Image (spheres, rainbow, N blue to C red):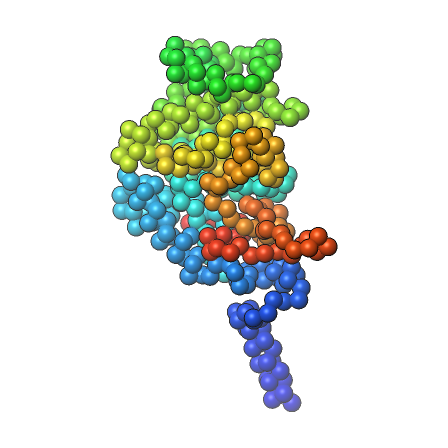
Length: 378
């Protein structure tokens, strides 16, 4: 009686091992269900996806050490430095292999409301080695990160609308410094074609009238590895202070690029992180043009939106594909449930007949691995 049971158990174990680690030549009959199960078990998704060796070579700690020669030229003991000093933890792939982004590559996050993007952004901000600019419509990112980021440098808050009862730490007048024609033209371009109706509100107008010592010193903010939170609430399609935020962010981007050009390697070190949450509504900066060369200047941009249609609606006139400079990572929606079930970077490509639009095609290159949200950044 025991022998048949042992044979049956051994057969079941062999079948499970074959299904988990040995891929057949034929595609499974129910491919979507098959992929969901494998992703839930943190197994290799199947043929066409990156292997562990490819993930280690292109997305692991060693790859980040190689890229840090370019992104962190002033970093000493590069091989022994913590991974957070030279990369961003993006997520975890099969077998919980950590996937990291170099500090000179940009990313775009597509997530529905309450999809977990705030927790992911907070984790990135907490461990980022350089100065950080964060735009958000709520004060939750500030509450999650300000206390820890204060250990690295000063905390600055610009919240003219008083969202979440978080007080602004400074006021900023975009006219200061416009005595120079180049600065005046640059800031006028940031305000171009946008309404200044917020100046009719006395509370909002006061945010651009700083007294002595109340303004933001942008070079000091970059030099002291500070953290700046731009908080605004949308009313309709855009926030009332969206033009002001866009002008301030553009000025910080310009100052960071100029400061980096004077450093060894021609880039800012440590780099500046710009996490642009709800960028189309509260900080409509020219993201497509920024992505072209910001990575080489020591500026990393993480753009957050609800979908590609939202970004196309804002920058459709800039060209059909302004995501060419983004490192795309694939995360199957609802299939990888960790803490935040529906967070994703970009949906898997769909193809096939119109009658069956749910077929998923695996990314053809190993640079696009499936990954899950990270637990922590060691």
